[in-house]
Image (cartoon, rainbow, N blue to C red; front, side, top):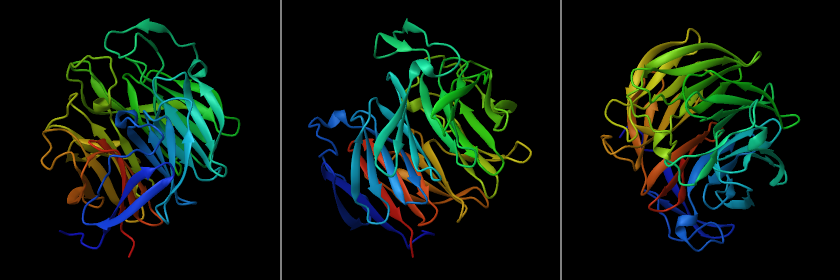
Amino acid sequence: MKILYFLIISLIVLSVGTLFFILSSSPLTNNQNPTKNTDAEKNYFTGIAVNDNSNIVYVADFMGKNILVLDGQTNKTLNIIPINGNPWAVSVNPVTNKIYVINRNSQIAVSIIDGSTDKVVNEIDVRDMGTQPPEMSFNPMRTQEKYYKIEPMEVAVNPNTNKIYVSDWNYPDGGITVIDGSQDKVIDKILGLGGPSYGIVVNPRTNKIYVDSFQSVLGKPYNVTVINGETDKIMTNITIGVGNGDASTNPQGLRISPIALNPTTNLVYAYYRTSITGNDFDSIMVINGTNNRIIDKIPISVNGIAVNPRTNTVYATISGENSMVGSFDIAIIDGKNDTIIDHLKSDNVVFDVAVNPTSDSVYVTSNSPKNSVSIYDFRR
């Protein structure tokens, strides 16, 4: 093992606002839940984000309808914030100390939290997303009889411009909603991405936005779209593969296409998922943000990707039955040569991952068979 010095700290949720910590060689979990719900199926941890300035961690509890607030220094639960929706993804503006929560299958598309008070200060209705009101229609592929045509999925923040970008599944053409962070109002809609948009990331140094879209149409280009943050116009599409003909309109969790970026090296890590379940052909495509060219690929099936720009290390939560290691591990990738150098172990199926480059801590959400947040502490 190349990396031997890390401590693994697992968070075991015992009751509302209380976490128990154990130093261990592998994360431990517990049956009990972080909310007042007694049914374990009412909790489902998904997205996670870190405020680098305050060292506060925010965790989306999709079915519990909460945001968990964790202290990145003490690893204690500071608060549990109820959300008027189903939180799926979360992103932080460290400059304004606002947290943006994306809700799926909800009337409220975006919940905005003041990080200084842990209060929801604003909400954006799904009807205010985009340039046209959403359409209601029946779809037998969905669990509910009616759904909004607009379905927000992921969120990225540019702290320099205070603009927030929300990806919209909106099958089949996708779209990006642009929000003014000073007013928390929708100011623009970017359409024509060519496929359902999912993963989204911003490089604040270049003011470019990158969107990874899952393309299910057989033979149609599977692109990463590059957007100019000054004009909010599409600059180019980078083809990273082709669709495989899996034409389901249901954006289930297994269909996610995460994306991450290292602002220091200006490299983009975009996931190319070739099927619903993932297989041996899935890869993280490494893109040079300067010339928009693919320079490498890392064969792996993943759920989430995060980058520590200080150490030039990429962390990817592994997914898929055909992955060589399994879906209980986090791959550690050397950003210098795009090689998997080690794995972090988990007792649960890992989902999303976030990094605090100030402390070098890595945070991972899990939701099966137990809900947990695992902290991998690399501080020396």
